[in-house]
Length: 430
Image (cartoon, rainbow, N blue to C red; front, top):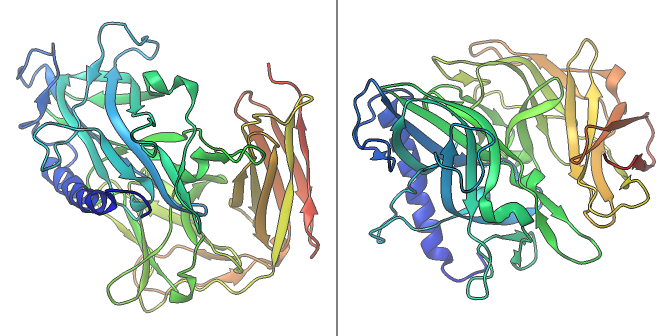
């Protein structure tokens, strides 16, 4: 880590990760609310008939070419009204966890890229009136002259760079949610702060912008809503990603991680209860897809055994690049380009994605030219039977969106070894 205090941060973060697991085990996704801090004005330790406990944690996914993505959480707040303003009554602060040697809660500095493979960091626990809270705000501490890297990123191979934050940051990152806190019970939720999708580069200025992409997920317990499995050790390279997807939309994602024995495994947690397509992507490899992978409310899912790791075949990479523009300008496009691939009989999967540069609209991604492989999930120790899908070889649909409107533009690209240049021109946003 290329900043002062790195050793302390690593130690504190390791402790927080352990505390997160201990907290979730203790609460069991719906146990007693004893020990939670009572929200100011909530009546203190009100009766179980009128009070519940809200427990919040933080997690992340893949890194997209960065060694560190630092944020510092200053405050977490919830409100029953999704339209409540900054100064309206009814806000309840969720006290940040106490990290020794501090004797009072301090702003929580976290490297998001350590929060993969099911690692959660606690953001706080509070007793509050039971009910549904529809607005959640995550307030980040700003960069200052005395601490210029409170919110920062370390691109691979370079030094740490301060992130330029949105103007609305002062009042917090706003999330419209539905946090149901039952009376006499504890409700656990995790904020998935997607570092990969949240970082946008501005090529001409050299700035790197933070445009947070946040999702809030319900957590039942650390032992459920969990999908785990094994990859071939040759996939232990930068950029390898395991994701669960639904209709071509990534729901959860993580890089794999070696265990003490050198084996390469992955854990996706928490995954909403349901059935998903699991997708493995890696540089120079075909995509590997396992359909019908379940996430359960009562148990975990083991995708495959260590004896039969997933080994996608090698593939020829193909570059795809271009620009995203809005009206007559490419400035601050907020554009995202995804490469989608539809397999024979389904599903449609996302193979790659990239944020367009904020000031030039330039984007660049790489897709595998060779056929993807597909298998159907089978419970138990039976090896997954992968079959190449020649019909999907080299066939992709590029999908571009911008954040300022609901417009979506698509363009098919067909088989061919040459790099593809595809520009997307949006009408001026309303």
